[in-house]
Amino acid sequence: MNTLLTSATKPDSTEDLIVRLLKNLGSRKEVEQYLKLFSSVEEKRFAVIKVSGGVVENELEALASSIAFLDKVGLTPVVIHGAGPQLQAAENAAGLTTTKTPEGGRVVTEESIALARKVYQRENLRIVGALEALGTRARPIPNGAFVAERSDDGRLGFVGRVTGVDLDAIEASIQAEQIPVLSSLAETRSGQVLNVNADAAAHKLALALQPFKVVFLSPDDGIRDEHGQIISAVNLDEDFDSLMAQPWLSASTKNKLVEIRGILQALPRSSSVAVASPENLARELFTHKGAGTLIRLGERIRCHNDLSQIDLPRLRALLEDSFGRKLHADYFDKKPFYRIYLADSYRAVAILTLEQGFPYLDKFAVTTEAQGDGVGGSLWQRLAKENDRLFWRARIDNEVNPWYFARSTGSYKSEKWLVFWYGLERFDDIQRCVDMALAMPASLKAHSVGAQS
Ligand code: ARG
Image 1: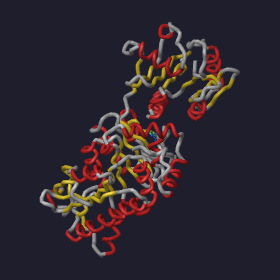
Image 2 (image 1 turned 60 degrees about the vertical axis):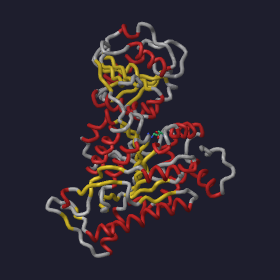
Image 3 (image 1 turned 90 degrees about the vertical axis):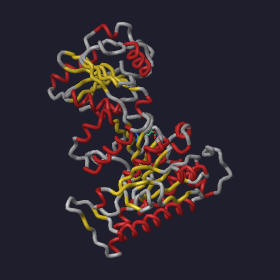
Image 4 (image 1 turned 45 degrees about the vertical axis):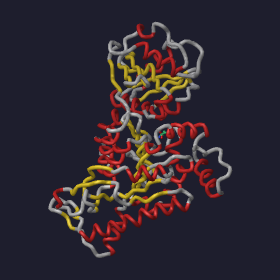
């Protein structure tokens, strides 16, 4: 029922909502393409959306709009929310003091689990109410979906570890075309309510549903780098170790990455995780560029020092497809290669030669599809990490040039070429490299689509 772009009969408020959300999006074609993709899996497998308590507290309206939007376009996500800040406030108001075990674990007493039940129910109903107010049917599932055992032999009181997920209520809700809204409360086999970590519950829910997307809605729009910029895409196979080693990444984000990797390892490789804010969720899901952080297991990029382990016809096809031109027949025989960085899927490659001792980027090719996945970015990062200096050239009308400008420390423009470099300090080194780059014979046959030669 994808009525997104055709419905003329919906009430004004719904139209307004869709128009408002679509305004910030990319092209209609892009939206339709993703809509088709997300509708291609079984309904209950579209997405699990984890909403932090802070978002429910501060961004309820945006949250409801973004979920109502999905509903209007015919998608039914499964929503699970936390309520950490609300519970803390309620405990403070009730004068409950927090007790900890000697190891620092927070003990949940009988009073606080009773309170948690009330608070979760209240927050759950706020979400459901906000959705219903926008004409989106939603069903509260405040408990019963998560089965848990007491953690730590009960020393933490009423705290649980999720051991299973009962999908009955969720499936019934989806069947009835109502968005299931779950709280992160669990029950033991005998019905004792236990508090569980909301991320851990979302994790278990994802394993049970095997969704195409797992979305973490948080007030920050995504995962941010050392400069506070959103990291658009993370390719875990390639980026995980280096991210975990970064001093600027907070311990809680690192934990989150470990958790996310665990989730993705248990899902089909086509599944992905998005970290976004309610405001930018539609843009994240329905445009190529996205707006938050897209995390996938991704793929390994291998560095080869020669051609012996490479499937040459496949590599040739990648180069010719992405440049839209034929490679000279003898391209692979002409000169020794220095390093070839190749993605396992043959969707991205960087080919380096050594020119008078200077690493030269002879080819950099990424398929359009892999660009959206962030493979090109990962490939560049790897390249830059392992080569402390580099020079390359591109035709002056190459659309990738802005991207190259951002990754170089200097450039030189001739009539036909832009020569870029980084890591070169001395003037004569730069001059030598520029001269060599300009004198390089073409390796792609004529008929240009403006790609590197
Ligand atoms: N809309 C696509 C998806 O959800 C691509 C999103 C890209 N997002 C990003 N942050 N790079 O799969």
